Image (cartoon, rainbow over all chains, first blue to last red; front, side, top):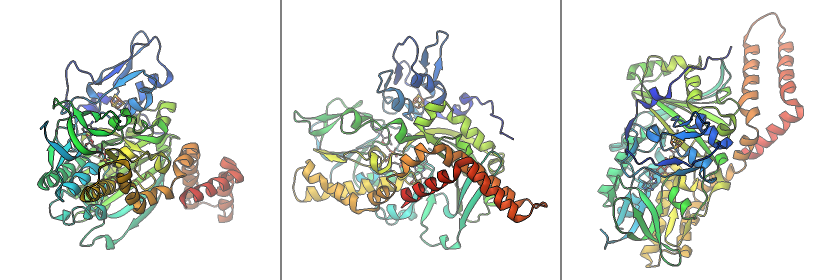
Length: 99
Length: 435
Ligand SMILES: Cc1cc2nc3c(=O)[nH]c(=O)nc-3n(C[C@H](O)[C@H](O)[C@H](O)COP(=O)(O)OP(=O)(O)OC[C@H]3O[C@@H](n4cnc5c(N)ncnc54)[C@H](O)[C@@H]3O)c2cc1C
Ligand code: SF4
């Protein structure tokens, strides 16, 4: 018997968290591309906040609002120049109540 | 602020930064500490087990007012397959001592407390301030920092980089490399709240006693990874982490892994009916000894996770961070007392202190472990747990099969899956890496 994969919405998990969103100043950007590399594409499932998604044209896009600033995408895709990664301004971003 | 020059600037108010800032400020240095979070701890994630001995060396009477959850009396290790676990368990009443050895803590609360101690010791602590760049002179020596809040450069004799695993500043300045996907794990974690009595009952605990469970096996779906479940006073921290390189190769999603772990028949009853109040994610340095970067230079030292000082085999990190922060602080104090400049030759003292401590000794002991677990993850995290579980079940089920036949079947299953040579070589390699 295998365990059923729960059909889970990450949004519901993120909803528990506290964020101060720096509107209009996303701290992570995806560089324009024709088609994503394997690593960039992997972010659509590996990002723990599901910030990365494939758009209708097959390109990877980011909405960084739910980002937990873990750095996984930086470690995978910064060196190749596919993404630009910074911390949010001081005080902004995720605020863990427990951590 | 701008004309002032500090003896030391500490970047980050996590375990390493607080230890360094406290050590220096409490002995009279003029210290500025900068933290990007709204409050210390607001960006930090940990299991979290906190080790008394290493904190005692910094704040001996921490038990008087530190926010501690439960002291640990029991540890369980689980090897899991999809429906079962084979476990080892250690519990001792000796851990119910007057000065307990290990506690669970909640990092956001613990870091706030530690930071209060740092302020009381006399350091200036500025939160909501992200350091954007290290300031360097024409020769490349670090002379201070630039932030996103204070216009000018802030100068100091020495900068302590305690910026955590992601270590943006040090890597951007070329002082060390960005962590590689195969040297960091991504962990996700949730906080599940339950009444204190319910936790006591489910884990067989009383009066502040705590229990931790660490688990490996098919839950990480052939990736090198580990799950954990720690009891706090009125909550349970539950999480799972695997190497980033494995996540990228398998395209598994971390929250799916966590959901599956939570739904495992061995885990589900422990967290049933709890209220989830937070979902967090963080990296853990897993590269061990071989990933330790240059630790000091002209005008700078690096401590804690930023320096990959993390013992993944024993799930220890905060104590190595605290200890490296303290030793960095002590080295700086000594150099300052001698009236010497904060240059590379003098700051090498920090490294020699670390070398003499458990920090480097422990990491050196396991220097081959990360590579072994990485290249053999399928065997260690899927095949063996499944075989162990079958063996245990075979042993436990009483039917009409003679015991000798059962033993033969178990041995045959191991040999079939891994071959005799494979088993022997895994055992030998594991033994050598452990040595
Ligand atoms: C899920 C999980 C479970 C763990 N469990 C355990 C455990 O049970 N026991 C244990 O001992 N260890 C555990 N660890 C490891 C432990 O959390 C770390 O080793 C420890 O927190 C490292 O401390 P640090 O001070 O080096 O870094 P951190 O605690 O990460 O602190 C770094 C600080 O620097 C700040 N910062 C970073 N960049 C900047 C900047 N540019 N400007 C200003 N501020 C900045 C951050 O906001 C942060 O406060 C666990 C880790 C994880 C992720
Ligand atoms: S930092 Fe982590 S949470 Fe944020 S976008 Fe990257 S992978 Fe996702």
